[in-house]
Image (cartoon, rainbow, N blue to C red; front, top):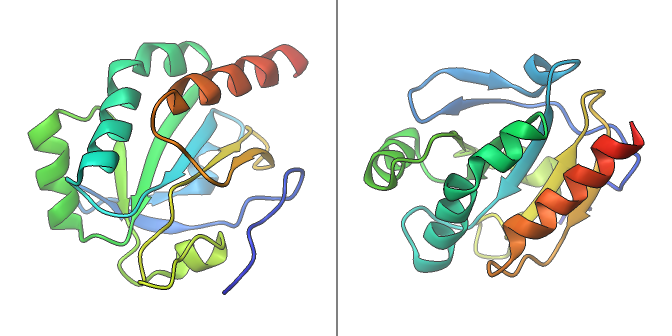
Length: 154
């Protein structure tokens, strides 16, 4: 198992396909937006659905803090498309079917799925916060508070 990058380190670069098959690169956000990169185990399961819908329902809070939400799991592009459409998710889900990004971020579990871990990456590509053992209830609020602190200090 690879280890998670630490706060203060440069976030590992990635290129993954979103639910529409478009390539999304971390470097596309550099200098423009903070990134909430959240890894989750599986599309359309109870905890993952609740987490995604919490981010959906509070998206204006994140937009106001100059942050993009990116969800990552090892599910396929097709699976992500169905999940996005079913719950009208207004942010991108990225398919890490080859598991390379989950490995780079140290979040792959023994079953071969991503663990529920969230990284906050600033506009310079530096990891500012890691939530290694996410509990879905209240998580969006933790993330919002962390972004608010980041925006105050920058």
